[in-house]
Image (tube, rainbow, N blue to C red):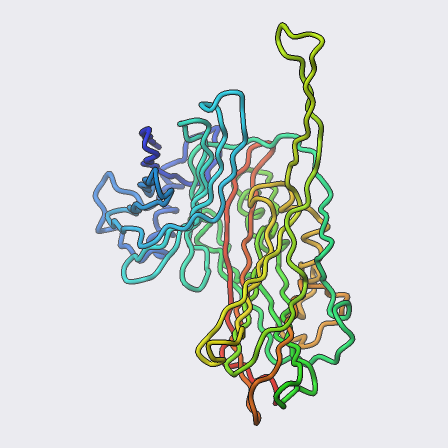
Length: 435
């Protein structure tokens, strides 16, 4: 395990397996991990030199001081792959008295190709000043399967007072938007494997449901120009199922383990493949709610002069709608609607707040997600709706739809824990809305 940092925000991080910190990983455990990762990355162990290991990947990152963009590479065993793109998913800064002690938390998504397979690495960094205190990395394939997780450093739980989320514009129930008859036009549950994450320690290779999305349309569909059409998407997560997969590993290897998963980001995209103009969308976009607390102090040698002011701290969620065009609707019609809702930060306590997660999670221990075409409102789910003014004649109205979730996962034993990020998405192409 090694790391070097330069003042120009360059990192060379040698990751390792998420093994207990109070003992060294044994030769047998390392060999089991190498075998599992060899299969996951399709790298023969016979091709490695004696000092090369698949379980200790090296990541190099450097940040452009002006553009704040990142570039770099990853080396797994004897395979070195440049990052084709590095996206900053979020960055938060916790202020301290000295700039040298600022805590900066960053989540990067780095895309690369290994053995002709497109992969991505979700890399989470915690810096205090110029020192990297902690890093984790989750590697996923194009189907969102988790191939492996790694870490550098350690984290400890601290007592954090949780705030209640305020989501005044959030709507989770089908029948709370408008009293229309809706017909399911497409639905699907996407499952992912989290097997290689266990790095050979435990024979967990089950496919877990990760996202369920329904596409609904008003019935009967408005098929004449100037009539209003209503199209909706309803999205669920499976936080408990994702957390349980991680908990099993930590329980197996640590003796006792815990894990929890929360959704920090959700997005829905509507793209109509016919001439239509976007009119309204729901829920309405709104900024984060804010907490206000007063700060007061006395200036040195200026008694009794006191200074008081208020600091506003964001919490809760923020939702945003973006409208755009595509080639089917013409240059003057907004027939693409992109929606996303996010918590303040992907590592905040809000991510795991029950009032947020319970509202978008499929019913616990209910396995009807693969065949239940019309779940009632008790199944909740995150519900978005758009209305369009039809600009086309005839029949056969089609649309493309995309739904995505970000999972933030905490897993550990006792006060020690790790943090991982998993992204999942699914698309519905050429969905017929009126037949």
